[in-house]
Length: 143
Length: 143
DNA sequence: ACTTGAAATGAGAACCATCCTCATTCTATG
DNA sequence: CATAGAATGAGGATGGTTCTCATTTCAAGT
Image 1 (cartoon, chains in turn yellow, red, orange, brown):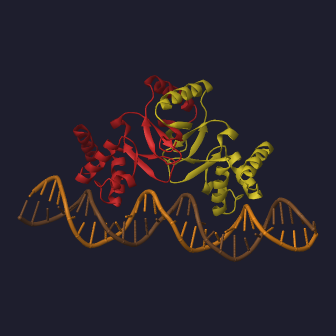
Image 2 (cartoon, chains in turn orange, purple, yellow, blue):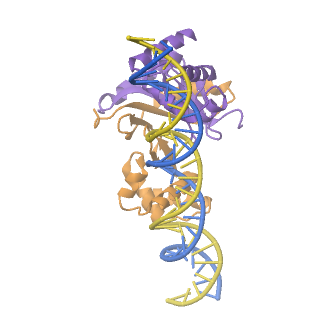
Image 3 (cartoon, chains in turn yellow, purple, green, orange):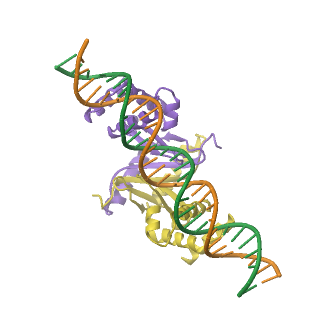
C-alpha cells in the first residue's frame, strides 16, 4: 500500500497535482475494493465525504494515469485503479444488477489475443493502445 | 434487406409491436451504416425526423432483440443491429473522437476464446451469456 | 511558529443525454 | 368508412455528472 501511495504521489506530481488526504482515502477505497465501484459506493463508504470532490478527484487521478473509468451495463460509471497498478484483467458484468467483478485469463491466451489484435488492426489505419474484454451474464446474486 | 424486414416484422409481432414506416427507416439506417451510430447521426440523416421517437423506437427494437446498444468512449450511446442479424463481431473504439468501427476475428480464435470464457466462469457462480471485445486506440481520422 | 498565495474542498446550481407526457396523427380491423 | 388503439413529435422532466464559488487547507519562505 505504501508503494502504491509512492507511485501515485509521483504520477500526480508529474501533472502538478498534490496528493492530499482526501485523494489518498479515495485511492485506498479503490485499492481495497478489488473491483470497479460506483460513486455511490465510494461516498457511502464514509471515507470520501463529498460527491463533487469525489468526481473531481477521480478525474484528476484518471488524468494522472492512476484511475480508470469503467462502463458496466447500467447508468452508473465505475472506477478502478489503472491496470499497471493492479495487473491486466477483464470484467464480468451482470446484465441484471450491473455489478462488475474482475477476472484474469491465462497469459498464453492473452498473448495469443494480443497477436491477433495486432494482425487485425495492421492494415486498418487504427492504432490500438489496449483492449477490454467483458463477459456479460448473470452474477451469483441475481441467479 | 427484404429478409431483414421480414425478420424484424416477426420479432416485433412477438412483443405486440407494429413495424411502421418510421421503424423501417430506422432499421435501414442501422443496416446501411455498418457500424454503431449515435442518435445524432441517425437524426442528422434526415430519414428519422424526431429524436424522441428515435429513442423510443430504438428501445422497442432493443426489446425485440433487433437492436443492440453500444457504449463507446464518449458520452453518446451508439446503436447497431443485433449480432444474430449481422454476424458476431467486435469494435475498434477511438479514444479521441469516440468513433466505433466493426471488426471480426478468425473463427478459430473466437472458439478458443469461448472455451477459455467457459472455463473461467465455471467455478465463479457467474453465468455468461455473451462477451464483448473492444480495441481502444486512435482511428485513422485522429492519427 | 507566522504569513501568504495558491490549490483543494464541499454544497449546491447548471448541464445535457436520455426518457417521459400528452395532444395529434396514423393504421389495422370490422 | 368508421373506430379504437397504437405510434408520433414537440417539448418538458429526470438524473448522473460537471461546474461555480465561497471557504478551508496546504506548502514554502521568513
